[in-house]
Length: 172
Image 1 (spheres, helix red, strand yellow):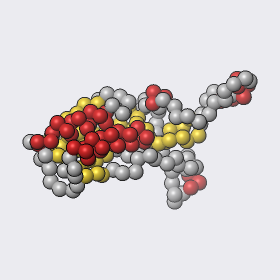
Image 2 (cartoon, rainbow, N blue to C red):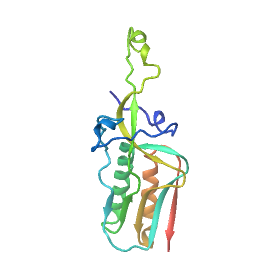
Image 3 (cartoon, rainbow, N blue to C red):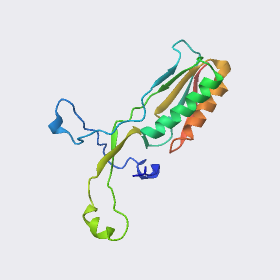
Image 4 (cartoon, rainbow, N blue to C red):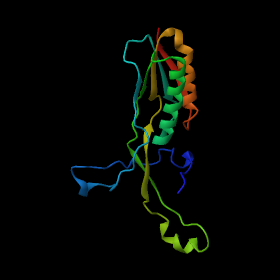
C-alpha cells in the first residue's frame, strides 16, 4: 500500500500511541513496532565551533521518520559538499509516536466490506516525532565564515518537512 500524504498525520489531534515494552509484552498497546527510517543522528566532526544554526518549528506538528530522513540527507549532502568535515550536524528529535492507519477496501462492493470500519483503531504503519512550537529539530555547529552555507542547508531541510520553520543563528 502506498504511503499516505503528510497532511493525513501531521496534526497533533490526540494522545500519542507509543506503548511498546520489551519487559512486559502483555501490557503493550502495540504488538509489533514499525521500523524507523531515521538511523543516523550525528554527522560531521567533533570539535569546537563558533556558531550554532538551528531549525526551529513555528507550530505544533508531527513529522514522520521518512520525512526527517529526507531532510537529514539533503542538509548533510549540502554541508558535506561545501564544508568537508568542518561542521557538526545533529538531529534533536526522535520518532517515538506510532501512527495507525485503517486499511480501506477499494472497488466494487467496498462499502459493504468496510462498513464496520467507522471507528476502527487501525494497525501500526509508521513512526513519527511530535514537535512542539519553538522546538529545535536540527542543529548545525560551524565557524562564522561558513554561516551562509549552514543557513542554506537548514533552508533545504525545511523544504522537505511539512509545516513552517524558522532558522536561528546563535553565537558569534
